Length: 102
Length: 329
Image: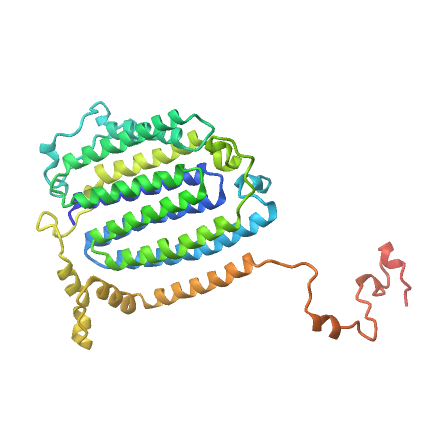
């Protein structure tokens, strides 16, 4: 992989990350907010694999495996929390928990 | 953004001529911008405007279409500039297809007002990233991505979306009247888009202008470390010691993981187990007032009543009037 190709892959990863960030900040549905964090994970994974390919070793792919593990753990915990919060207020609106701010 | 604004190349909102950038950037010492920072800035602003119009709100449909057009135009211009100046970069037509699908899917994840559709578009993005992984010779990671994300995580998301189904408001004809308020209206779209696209602009600026620092030892030579050479390099000790001969990237990855990253791999398994237990504990439904039958029958009050009230402990010589009430012995 040439440096030029690396730049292309990095650009795609950056775009995915930025879109996920925007979604996390704007959407008010808890489930969609966590989907947007997964989108950010995707961008990071593309970056890691591209760098691993660029340097010609396997560390990037090993990193992505651990990113996937963390993403899976985070998804299970976060969705459990979402179910819990939904039972409390009977809504998925993140603004329903506005009184938690300090 | 300040970096972009103060850049001397802001005045030149023109694409760098293909003749300059057809040289591989790594052979040139000075940074050789693929895309002018000014153009990048304008594209970021246009894309921000487009995504502000696209985000769910109680807006009329034509405005959303305008936003989609602006966003698509910005992405298209970026792709054309990159594609023109990077002809022969080693990215084939499949890269462009998968990248386009990934970006479009990600945009729809963020902008679609219904969570179920967001989840489905996320599957599309995952598939496209898996395609990109395959293009980078990471077949195992592509398969794992589809299995874990497209399979496990997305099924969990869809389950939770169904579990946490809210009462829909009395529906009108238009789509945003059938949705709950927090799905139909987004929060601070202008600020969020400004922050997000400022970050994206800076990231792209660094990637395309300042990546001259990233230089490989074989820079300028034959660009690609071929997959075969990579496998041979990483697994030569394995062959010497065990006679085991990996033939593909997946086997090389397994060899790498279980030889060099064994502790990390076990830790990852531990994290998954802990997360599973934690998720069960968190989402468990607590039934108030329910006790097992045998507990009710077996446990009785102690025969000798124990007074465990701290105030009933007699204290001599205290000034506390509550404790004075008790007899001093």
